[in-house]
Image (cartoon, rainbow, N blue to C red; front, side, top):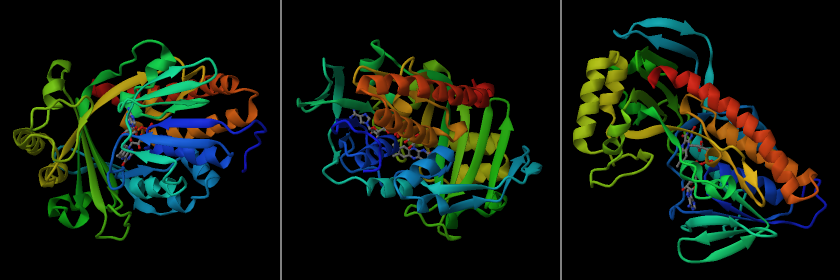
Length: 377
Ligand SMILES: Cc1cc2nc3c(=O)[nH]c(=O)nc-3n(C[C@H](O)[C@H](O)[C@H](O)COP(=O)(O)OP(=O)(O)OC[C@H]3O[C@@H](n4cnc5c(N)ncnc54)[C@H](O)[C@@H]3O)c2cc1C
């Protein structure tokens, strides 16, 4: 135990087992609390991430759970370049940046909780407040009471409404991110300039960018890494349902994963890339076997906690990916929640302080993301 709490341990139940939920569990169990995560994915999330930029809050969290080594190993982009339409370098900035592996981070923090504390394949339907705690209702008909429920269930959060008291949908920002991951060895020769650099192409209502990330197992040696490219493009609200409908005709509310985008849509994307992007970016976009798409949303909860329920990470505030701060924000939330639970006299006092503290932080990052994406709306 390394917290300063003197109250009896709390029974804490966390909805969502991605990084936000894991950060909270890994910290709070160190203070002696009885924690358990419910994650709806049956197979776990290992192998599904790419890369991320480590930031101050993430370093602090990794120190607190004794996983600092994770942030020391990454892939370095030694400079930023901005390409013009013909593929020439219009601008160059010496701002090196390191991408660490999402999967290595996930595995490291997952290793800080036991199998009993991390329950896969259990989907939560709703959360509700009680007189002295909170209750989770599961899709399988089960229910469980807790002293504290943490909603770390991302942008489709089912816990959100129990905190805000009203339906709290995300608002679509008017554009999507087409993405792809290519094994480094499959990078086409026309894309050689992109290797080891953080590259951008900015055009009216279009932003393309890309960088190397670690391999699927966290590999960082040259030749075993992956190239991650992103192309932000506007999609009118009326056309969004068609963009998020998979090859079997099923609509997905936020994104389509690799292999889910219908073949004719992939063909159109590649034709557009050839027509509109500088040759290096057109080459990576056309080389990608299974591009995927993520719609960009905004959401800021007016409060991040009420009674015995707290929101954390994307469930509380959805920030645009341009910020590269989603993971750091979730780490900051988890650290603040732990601190207030250790210091405040009651759970509800702790949550009130947490909400005040982190709403302001989330709001500032969300505003920064809206500025970065404003030209795409
Ligand atoms: C598979 C995956 C890969 C990612 N890869 C990257 C990356 O490479 N780089 C990067 O910067 N960011 C990545 N992200 C996003 C990043 O991890 C998040 O910004 C950060 O974790 C904060 O989000 P979160 O944990 O609050 O929510 P999310 O990461 O969105 O996680 C929410 C979790 O809750 C679970 N869940 C949702 N509803 C329910 C329910 N009703 N019952 C039970 N469980 C539920 C979901 O399955 C999910 O695991 C990835 C996220 C995921 C899920």
